[in-house]
Length: 363
Image 1 (cartoon, helix red, strand yellow):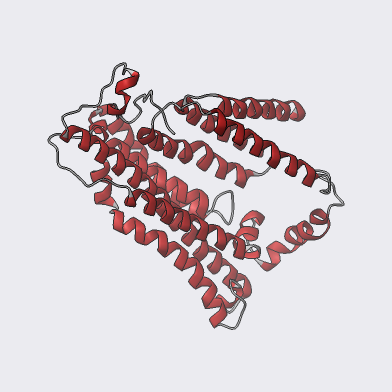
Image 2 (cartoon, helix red, strand yellow):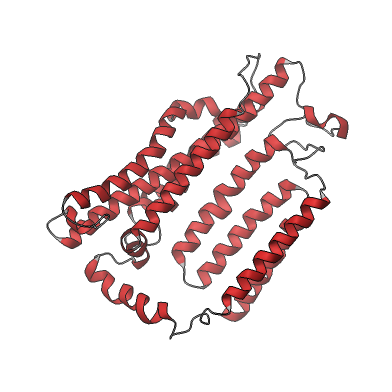
């Protein structure tokens, strides 16, 4: 039964991936990307990788399609045909795929009990993690303590990616213009059903994010998953009640500051270990008892991870939403109203609703 389930999930993953590469409707591709993330999460669950499945469900099936949709609202729904670029992409994929397949020749078989990872590394984590770290979730002990340097690097990469998006979108942002009435971004909040449902859901979303944040030592979860869930709550609030409303709760400047604060919390935890005569990110120096110090350090760095991940995701959504609103305001000031019906190909550049079809497409 498990084998049949694995085969079915892998077949669905393959079909979804081919569909994403083949289809030219980018809105449909974004929806398929969310389905791909959900299927991946299910496949990870069948393999017993609950933490990885949790992360994939939150990121791959949750916030990533949402950010892709915000991007499509700016660049258009359909992709222009470019045979030269398609040939280059196919050649690149084939080359990288051949290299990856070649690299697997020297790797041990999947699940091989005699593999170095199974014979040396994994037994130490399984047998000694409880005594050395003192928490039941071995995945958290590996990510936050044993592999703390790598996790710190991941947080820095997320922060750097946020800075990259900030520099690109802020540098290309048009000058704000004043126009009467509300933009399409703000008009979304007029739907009474969405407003009521959002008010009901946002509080449980935030509460669940707190649970995931501080329960990661005992079950699936941690800073990465909690940060994404926090961000989803704020993005949902912004989509329903408008950008200005969510900025009153968390201003753009505050979000930028918090994205750096999370990295500083992680780094300063390591510096405290150095100041107490231990190695960088050796949390045993944070308390008289080594296990207690590990607990304190893991809670601190997981909090830093959650803050940075949530702040960067919220900042990116702010930037895309502001770009869309400024575009709509600019069109309104010029006397051009975004249309909602069928738009001819020659007039597609004036249709800029949040999910409006742009027949001229994206480059």
